[in-house]
Picture 1 (cartoon, rainbow, N blue to C red):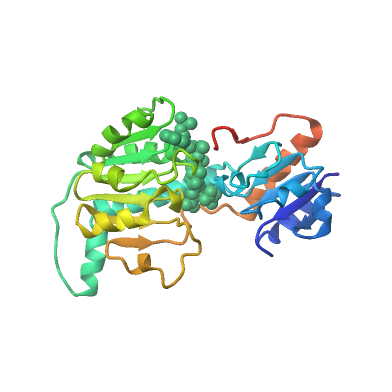
Picture 2: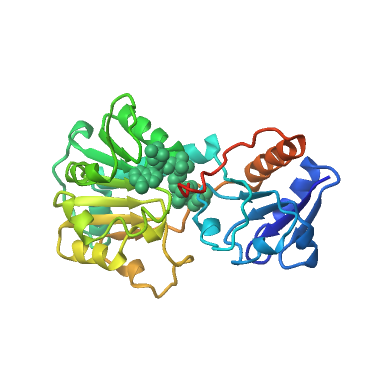
Length: 308
Ligand code: NDP
Ligand code: OXD
């Protein structure tokens, strides 16, 4: 039976040990930096220490416990073995719920009335029909596609931007770097569901965010590194942007004294848009472990050259 190493901060993945033993009878599970991890054929990772995977000479497969793999690909010594990630309908639904909630938060002025309620201020705002609100989604993959379709169901004017051309019923699609400015200029509520890669890091800087129409809002569900925080804060303070729901940050957990917690117009959520259960993660890891042992195609492999 296969030998699996868990690589993360101490204790994080402990719940997987019993679940992996249930799914893969006879499996050996060790946690980095135990010496037994050197014998592992499969590594299950969240933010593995750079160099740790290179010290596993028998490694045949690296498995992320998350949808995003930037925290693994950032290791310059990463061994050249397949890398798989988590893709799951429950995670997709959870992300869509979060995107719908955050879209409605701005669309129906909850950002303003929650703040007004703290001051006992009774104030109503002009209402807009969903069809008159343009929601733009960066990234039209597993998560962006579902969120876009559900927003269409609610009647929003939905557009999306991806690397390669795509067609999706009811969605105006844009692709490639040359189309980004046009996409942004027609977006009232911008939702980021991009992977973090060398092409997308720092994408939302002052120049790009300024392309959004005055009064636009940002919903950041992807990675903190997609946004240049000082540029975002500058555009919020100048009044060009209305607000931002930020679920992801360069540093997580976001320190309690970080100014973003208290920045007017910003709502911080704790990387909770879509959280995979240990059961879901284990079932996908175990499925790929069996496939590896049987020499069958792996599921949800990452294109390492593209970075996602
Ligand atoms: P996918 O890999 O399925 O989709 C990625 C999408 O981004 C694709 O449409 C791809 O285009 C597009 N894309 C990638 N690079 C570029 C680029 N340079 N220019 C334009 N478009 C680009 O990812 P998922 O939908 O599964 O997940 C997206 C991200 O969401 C994850 O990487 C992770 O960072 C984040 N996430 C956050 C969670 C949270 O709780 N906050 C939970 C889960 C994920 P194309 O279709 O042409 O390939
Ligand atoms: C992620 C995840 O990639 O939680 O952020 O899956």
